[in-house]
Length: 121
Image 1 (tube, rainbow, N blue to C red):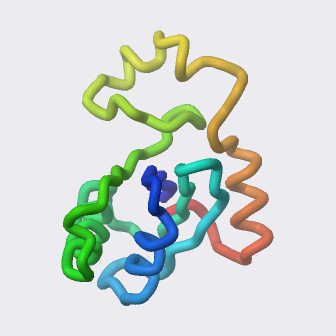
Image 2 (cartoon, one colour):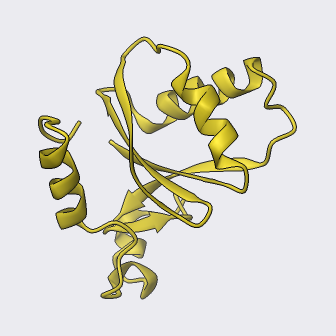
């Protein structure tokens, strides 16, 4: 599963995220970093909410209460800032139908191949 961490101090947050093992998460990989956006591949069968709760609890436990950050999913190769909107509505939105993509399927496929990661979780 691909999630996006957006944070000004993402380096510190990534240190906290990567220094622990998580039940149900086999690996956390950085696909790419664009400004304050960190595109992560999470090798797991857990759902987005469970992953985010797990990572946020880990960050809080390590002193990250004052940090401002958020996690997002990807929809049609774009960061989904509007998770509350239905897929039917998103499919009509110009933002999700532009040619410019935040993380293309080809980029993800190339990343998985180059890192010998099997399939999309």
